[in-house]
Amino acid sequence: MRGRSILLNAIGLIIILVLALLGGYQSGISIRRDTQAAVISQQLGEQFQYALVDMEFGRYENAQQRLEFIIAHDPDFPGAQQKLTEVLVLRNAPTPSLTPSLTPTPDFTGAEQAFARAQQLMAAQDWPGALGALDQMRKLDPSYQTAQVDGMYYFSLRNYGYDLITRQGNLEGGIYQFTLAERFGMLDRDSNALREGARYYLIGASFWELDWQQALFYFDQVYRGWPGLWDGTMTASERFYFASMRYGDQLLTEGQYCEAVTQYKYAQAIAALDGPAADGFEEAYIACFPPTETITPTLAVTPTLGGPTIAPTDTPPGAPPTDTSAPPVPPTETPSPTNTP
Image (cartoon, rainbow, N blue to C red; front, side, top):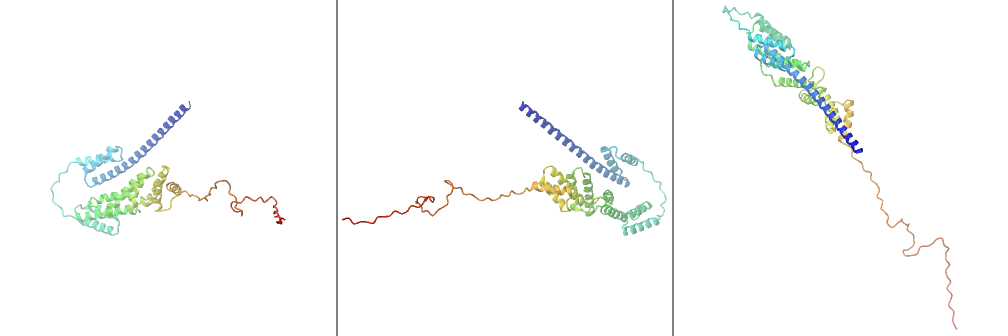
């Protein structure tokens, strides 16, 4: 009976462990699916912005491909179906036949004024105003100073995107302006690196409080190149600091003490640890580097062979022991010799 009871308890314990493992596995799958959905949603948003840019510049075929890609992954994506309909209408619209007429003498007065105003706004570093003046000039006369205007567009869009990211924390808007600038010319190294840093920041933010390891992976790369990059709430340095502490807490609960110590030290290099991280660091450090046992030295006792030790006396060796309790024996008198007659 006792053996049967032990067997049943063991089976019950195994069932509990299996259920716990299945629960953790399902929870992990759910978190991963939510994270993937957030990343995909962000990618679809970027593709939608690119499709709008393609429509603006008349690249309807590219815009159609992007919108069809978005709808294939998310049929309910806001505005995607409507824009796809617009693109199909624009692509299939018949090209109007132009009736030859006398070419009037072009009037550059309005275009020249808009051009001069755009130059003034660029000198004042008013990038949105400069872009508005350039758009007005293009509407007045699309052929006016084409090459120079394209260069002004590139310069204004590039600097506007740079300011949006570095000064205003508008990462999505800055990425969009950089993408528009890229239509007029290749981005310089600093702008391209800043755009990549902004993208990594946004991806890392999508993992925030969902997967600290992934969040730390992306913010580590942003922190190394652009520690001051921010999204209006926290800088990349602050994000890396906070994610290092929380990932250290997670490693501590998983029993990975030395790895947790490493993460806490990363955070310590930026600022002092908060309360939970400080307690976790102390616990993880003791577990990773346990103190060495101190051995207390003891006096060696030499064992005595043959019984208890007898204190030495003045009695010479070989002499019988003296009984001090007996009275002394008087000396015997020796008779003097007599003469025998």
